[in-house]
Length: 423
Image 1 (cartoon, rainbow, N blue to C red):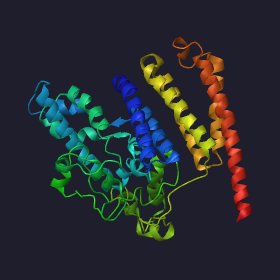
Image 2: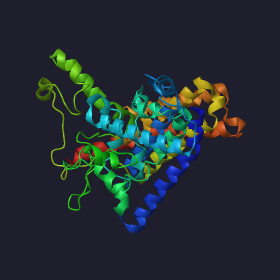
Image 3: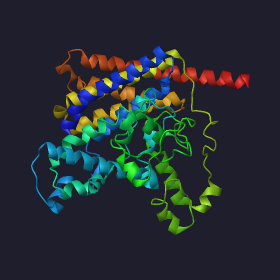
């Protein structure tokens, strides 16, 4: 975990710089692919995923080292060929994990967050799950274990494999000639994120597109069929924590209310979108029928509000970066508590972006808790050791969020009342 946290100290600034460069390029060419609240929601989702992955919050069925010890047919030393074999087997496992996430109801919940943005850009690449708490992925690495690929090779390759999936989330790069037959490209991944009938559940590869071509899930981007992005049951919220569990909540309600006991069990393992027959009529869900005419999710915002939530995003990113920088000294309790402050911060300001009535209370409770923590402890998880006025700056941040949450919540209520009067 600590090694992963250290890697993120370098990866996070790089991802942010690339997102900012894409936004700048969009302004230069006057072809924008970013909307402020959507991008802030995407980046906020990335923060939640990073914190979750850096803490021991996964139930592992079987670890790769255990699998390796049990079934390896041969034992090989780590060399360049081992890394090549490891990368190929890791990508093969990734394809099937991705396919499983698209095809089975229960597993779709851990992936829907990645598809929830109705835009397609580098920021949406950071929409990663916090609901994937079942560590079954090593089971898909059986080919690597059989070939005796050392655990340390997989540990090194796994974050590299993940980070390499970032670059192709863009609309600014066209088709790449002969590379289209070997690797996953932006064109192919635009298809994957689209909800057009021709494109649904296609191009499931992560680095190599050969798996899609081998197993019948490949679809070329069609010139006369521009991709439309999102999910068929729109998230209709900027809150990434809510998006992570929306599908699971629907499954739980259907399993609870259906009168067919067989369906209470089957619903979890049936194809994505399947529902018990009695639930379709009694509790219908709104699904996009025409992908070319639906209205994208949007809420009230002006430049001042956008600046405020962007400020919140920046401050929470800094708090998280310090958490990783001070990872080994904070202790497990400190890491969980600091992570909780960031989590609730994201929940609060993204709920404010939605215009939720409870957002102001979450912002207030978190701010007051943060202020009390600093006043009582006299520090912010050891920040004063690195910066003498560090905890004072964090204290100031909590005071600003306390006032900001109240101000913008009140402003939204006034805007809503004015809107009702004009109707």
